[in-house]
Length: 233
Image (tube, rainbow, N blue to C red; front, side):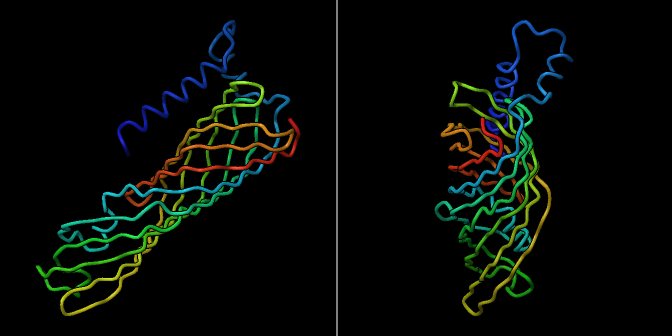
């Protein structure tokens, strides 16, 4: 993870927490109870989003794919198109719980090296490869919000990401060409920040940045989402 990401998210969450508390509140447990207690804003909602995801790779998964071959280069392409859907429960004006599914799209990778890959390339022989890297999965987490006005609010979110990844790689040497597919899955983390603007009693629109860690890599997602609330606000 970028070393600035965790402090940034921690700062945002701290500001949301402090801003949500009354200056005249009593003990900490009273503040916590108020923060977690349902209020008149509680409802369910559905949020659909589309955006672009940029793979920030150290090529860790490629190293695993090539049995930690000696790499001489690794390049990836432009941002991929991403889609996401969330179902949430708004507990109060500050706190919501969300679950969702996200498809982070596909990233084309090109890398070069020399080593034994899948016992197909003689040790020391130079190879070139192109691969398609796909990540999708399920999320569960909490969203913390702070109203900036009657229609606009800022939010921060953090949670878990159960991801599934797929590498489809084609290797080319001076004497051979073959393909390898690698499937992996596991748990990791996600978080983000953004803004939401109320359009009507049922509809809102938002924009934000989200971070997804998976398979030794991470992706930055920039999105626009549309939210429908079951209970009018």
